[in-house]
Amino acid sequence: IAYLLGSIPVSVLVSKLIHKDDIRRHGSGNPGASNMTRTFGLKSGALTLIGDAGKGLLGTLIGLWLCGEPGMYYCAIAAVLGHNWPIFLKFKGGKGVATSFGVMLAIMPWLALGCFVVFILVALLTRYFSLASIVALLLFWVVVIVTRFGDVPLFLTTTFLVWMSIWRHWPNIKRLANGTENKINL
Image 1 (cartoon, rainbow, N blue to C red):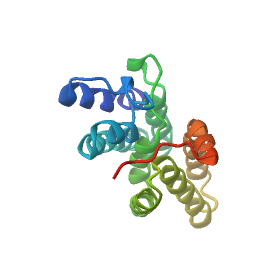
Image 2 (image 1 turned 90 degrees about the vertical axis):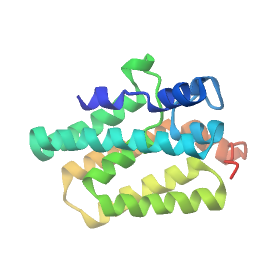
Image 3 (image 1 turned 30 degrees about the vertical axis):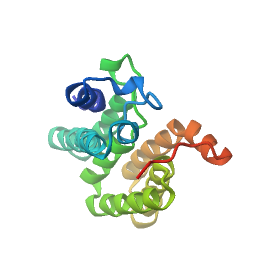
């Protein structure tokens, strides 16, 4: 259920319903909130962010409701895997940041909101969504390690989701390093 929920292509639906276009034909070709914001503006990007985060939040809560804490962690991972490799888009999806944010909201809401504030600040200061995403993800991971030391299921889930998203950002990291990463036009 969580994988199928994560597979719902929010950005493609928003781009087709509102803009009569397919986001995958623009910018990076990535069906995620960053490309939506760069291509179709803040409103469409925000709708995509809310939808993608909602998939992670709902998928994680469904797991908690059906199977308790172990189900919460399994479904958190499944929702993000669905976003990154969606069955409805021939397994070509996003990088999992917004969906992971939804997962984080379900598991540690105050920390997730704090990391979102950091994301916004880094994005505003640098104009790089990719850098803001990486910084916010790493912050979440480090705070989980420091404050919830010994919570092995949380540590493993967080580690998997954070490093999977950073791995999916590898081309962005290379572009950041050589100064060719796309900036957001604010």
